[in-house]
Image (cartoon, rainbow, N blue to C red; front, side, top):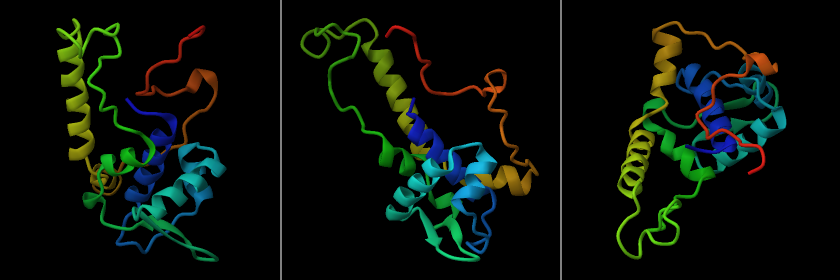
Length: 164
């Protein structure tokens, strides 16, 4: 569905949404990295991109850190997605063998187009408010994930295949 950078950027933004209180609470890149079990250097780079895009605001020094630049219900997953992914606007189906888009669509073309539209619609319709609600209204608490091989969490990215 999306790459590792996008997944990690959404994880960082979701943590900022969980603590949203109008921007008073700020978290450092280190705090976010620790709380989401992510590499600190990667989180710092992602926060820089998110800040340049106007999605987070940061302040340096003691008492500094990052917060969402707008209310969580005003920031969509798509706002983050477009920073790290490129939309494939090619009319050719990746499984069409060079035929799809030239003649009749390949056997999976229509299903693929429908799926891509559904994902795009979900990214546009889903705001970071769901994370604020989960933490503040429902009392769900973030827990660092177990990073051992047995403790890997399910990813929503395509699995890696050996030899491909």
